[in-house]
Length: 116
Length: 107
Image (cartoon, rainbow over all chains, first blue to last red; front, side):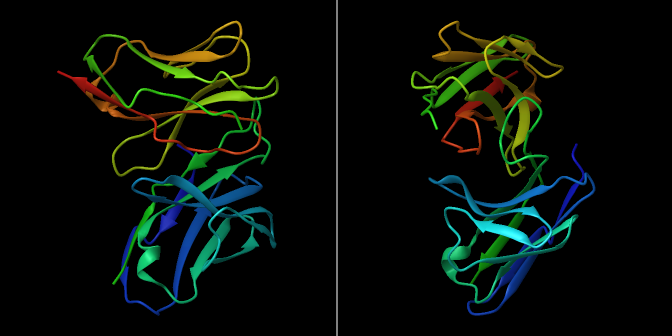
């Protein structure tokens, strides 16, 4: 399995509080991603990073910010959590953004977030 | 990205081969076919991918038709632990997960 660690694995928080999820990798892959998964929507890309301090928005980025100060760490922050952000969050890594013969996304185990 | 069509669910007996179909009739020449699976409450797991040729690895085989409009993922000897949602994805730059096929392996 790819060396991806997500923390925390479970979190319950209250509406309006800030929340930070962490993704740590030991593979030295350049690209890192944050997805959320909700019933009826599949996995949706929130943000991704293509290098240290280089990030870009995905399809559902509103309400989320990210940071990447080191190759191995990619943080997802909910500045003021809302109930609509209750979801399972997955981090993924890949060597390249452009898929191809040698570039595959590997996923972490997920963080289950409940916003009450 | 090309759209994919997969059956909603399939059953397979333990020890038998599981053949999961995927239609992708609008696939373009530079798009790969990827298969992932997601076991309940876990992160998606990469299985296999291919462009034109059939591929095999330790987990599965991927058969792509000559016109590339459809493919089949084959798990040669399904076990109970293979029960999962299987996603067929056609893309050359990003992963878009649809609803997939829920494969249930029965004892």
